[in-house]
Length: 329
Image (cartoon, rainbow, N blue to C red):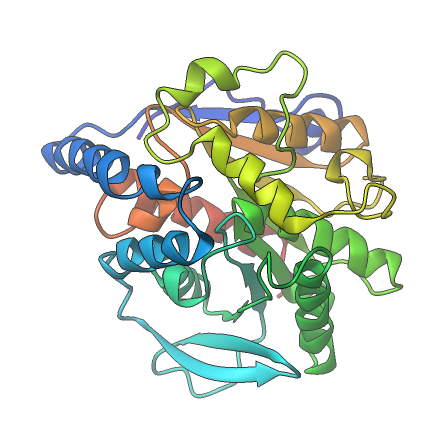
């Protein structure tokens, strides 16, 4: 996989975002699987995510689709609870000691679908790559639990990691789509509550705004996106019932002066592309270190297809490298 347009150097990152653009790797496996996945997503998932389908159908569609994704056999999953929140604890197999590092992984699903189970193709691989405990909460979903229930659950799980003795310098928060939003907002909410921030944030295709951003390209990308329809976002907005005056309601209005170093990955062919660009530009403007990786000809959370496509494997490798770089030993 080749990269271009790289701004390098930590000091440069303070003035200019670090942006890398990756071409899909050459090879028959990548090409064939990419074509097959595009067709499968466009036919069997995209039509069922959003209206007119009820959320129960959307949840079932995501669960069925994710069940077909291979999981990394080098990590094991254990069910647990933190207060009222069901969680999964994922650790590398054969590791006798408690991991010294932890990843709080917040799954996507537009705040109305998904679970730790639907994202095991990502969480098990991240645990195997980093040697870390991955804590994946099954946070409450809308519409049964309107905002800020989801954020409250994620902050509670971050607090739990601190209670268990994980030093914040050895914790990363990661998530995809709605989970990318929650990754960003959990760090901000935790620090506002007086907790120390994590060492780093990793966000895949984060969903910060359901409305067009300045210089938006969402219209020309929607036809290329094999997974996401804008109508889904409108459906979700009604389900979340976010109070406009809530101090944590709008990610675009937050103070980013203490934001941890962040890595954002996005596919070039997805509706949420502009959200990722906004994140790296806003963090950099606030004087924070932020990196954006744009994967050309790839779609929303293509990382979930790890073990099938080399580009997905590469993206998760990059995430592990970023976390390790910012963790204390």
